[in-house]
Image (tube, rainbow, N blue to C red; front, top):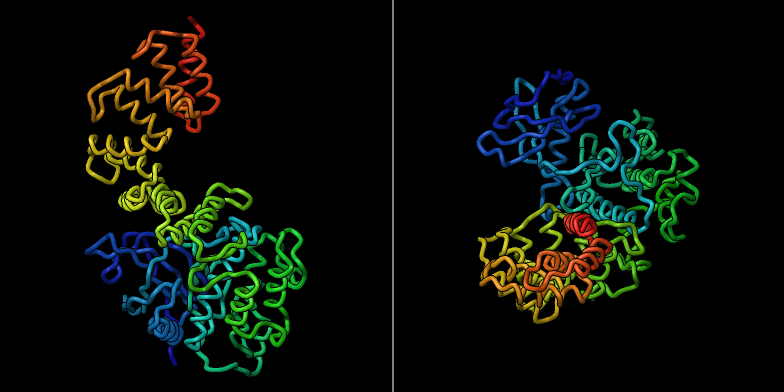
Length: 483
């Protein structure tokens, strides 16, 4: 019989096989997981599970067998993929995908970082976990330890990834046996598992309990089976959670597909597109998809969620909707809801600008003027600004005015600068009002008029959406009031 493997001390920068340890990510009873990088290519990041004293050779090999089973096609989304096993000084280590992100709970307090008090967020979280679990269960595998610490919210997409298959078990049908040692985590373990009974419904219980705990509601037996007062969930969504956490397994949903089908029929949450018809819209309508993205981006009537906004923009952009392409470009340029990626920003701006979207044309002008993700090209910037100005876009009017004032990509022409600042200012653009005020203060392209300069800068201060414009307007106001 295999004995218990002893845990060696590991430290950052240790070389383990062909990998260099970076930092400890977390761990549990059977293993500690480290973030590591390939020694010959530091850009390749992995996660390495190092066994604790509680792990046996048999338990490690069972986990490897499960992870290899999950590698079989078709691919299962939102789980870390097994890469290899390596032997290090007699220890068997598991190398798998590194998932960038954090669990939804604080590692010390175990309290939710962002409680799921909004039904849209909770539905999105639940749906993705169900979709992943369904595919895991189809391989004949029960996770057995679904809890917040075993979920990672991916930092790029906001999707929940299910991790840690250390106590997962393969079975081909509901397994029944005698009393057995407690497997799983207190508060999330399905009651029947302590009696040796195990099935898909066991993971469903744990998932339902986890969703309830992530609402911020106290974890006690009563809250699993009553409506959740702190969360304004619909009766339908609450009924799903209540059925998921019934104490008797026979009273629960028996598989994930049963919940997914009920979800889709009642709410329109679709497994192929991962789009939730929050606003009663047709899921194929790119305009409504884009508008839903805007609502999540701005927090208009819903809890602000930039990652979910990006998903709606992407769905709409994939159907060729120019406004969504522009908004998606903006998210990639600024890093709203996604990892900042200037090249992708340029891609989506270009797609949108080619369809004549004035905002995308203006943004491309700014991109080429400043060399953001592209080779700097001031003349091309002027061309894009002019296309946008021809459609009356106030930001482009302001930007083109600045180019004429400073001689950027064009011959310096202060009169044309005033013309475009004025056009933009008349539409309420605060940056243009500030620039026009400064021109009147200094007599650039116009006769000096300090009173008009003061009025324009005061307008700019009141309407400014960015700190730079506000501060510059305030400084000008202070100077002009001294005169």
